[in-house]
Image 1 (cartoon, rainbow, N blue to C red):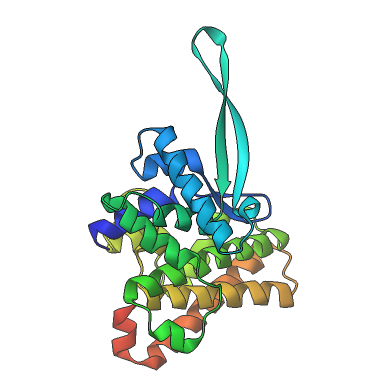
Image 2: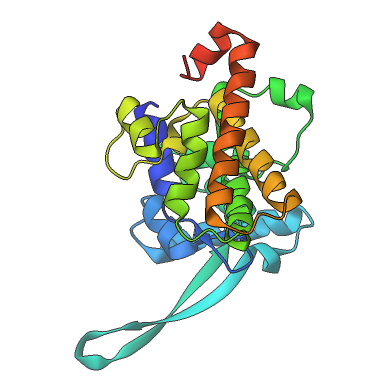
Length: 257
């Protein structure tokens, strides 16, 4: 992953929030800092333009720009009410589109949120027209949502040690490697997400592992952590075997060989 990709992930992924329903959102105040706007007044002007773009597209502004009033502490025990917004991906995209184009980070945001706001399912023809970066963003988004669903299924199956559970799947897919082993092989720094450092094909392989494991846990009505881990490991091995059968060159491209 190049410096631009790392910067994009760090700025926009790290400030993303997930609500109780598994829906992702961003706070405008945090996005302001990520986009290098020092003054809220100027950033709120950008938000106003983004709202107008939303309205002109016949899309509900209130669904994508949710007012959130916050109380912050001031010196000597005083408090102050400030305005903030909970933003959808689409709202963030419109903000990036209406931001200061002279800022390099604005261009990064436009690319990132453009991919994030794509439909969850696109046609095979549309997918083939994407660049590798666009495919990677698309697959990463699907993988993140897949992991959320898998975690819910694993929890219902009795899993409490989620690190152990996820490593069971990685070990099956990566011939015994844990998440830490994969991170070291990729030369990642502490706390860097291995999924953020995979190409589109490797992400697709992991997404297949994730979705098939979730399906198996539910179908077999797994109710113990050990069985859940064994199931995840088995599915990982099955996916690995399928990849090897697809050919050595394909395996090398996703770093399994």
